[in-house]
Image 1 (spheres, rainbow, N blue to C red):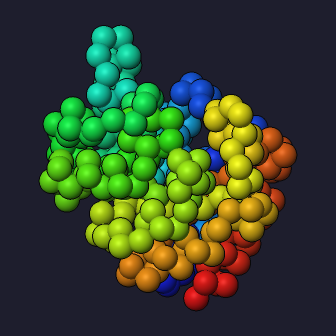
Image 2: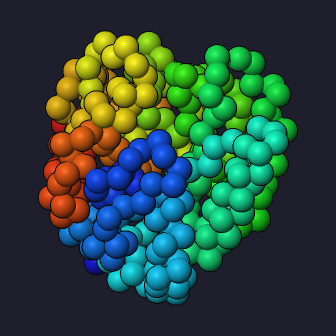
Length: 286
């Protein structure tokens, strides 16, 4: 049975278990069947999967089998995670282009709704040099029947929601959008004001997690080990959700937890805890 209302998304790490975020070759110890079943049983109607697990799932079950699995469990939204290196050169670009082909082919075959995109790592800068490449990527996504969403990250060239919005507007393609992650926004030293008046039509997805108000010394340790369930930390999730809803956004909400203790949970327990925390964060702001 399909749940009505805004989609609620188990992003790729929600059900991945004991795998290593940040490693582009990392794979989940759990088969996609167990992960989808756990997400659906918890209440999610959206599901995310990263590239290595996507390849395994397609090889093991076939595109028709994966699509049937999603449909049978009421999963109406699929996002693929993630493409980096898309504006690079040399060997890094060659590896990125191979991932791009995998993501676009899978998006077309499975009817994926979104491909997440990571900006180039480096100091925040004018997005102008990225516009052409991102517009090209958006066009390829549209040809595959999907959309791309760039996630602003504080240690990347696109570090803030304002920069990401500038990029997608200048790219000028309806298949381009922005992934707004409250934790990533907090690590750029920003709060709910950073998404005040953010146009909902440019929002590709929203992700929620919690953490300390002050960043840890090392960004990557903080990012991969200290992002807890919504409501478990010090971030103003209520203000973030409330601000987006006042802007007119309520299309869908994801939860993205990256924490060592959480990764040790079996998929059913992890998904149940994530859904309960997400539902609580959204209910208290309605």
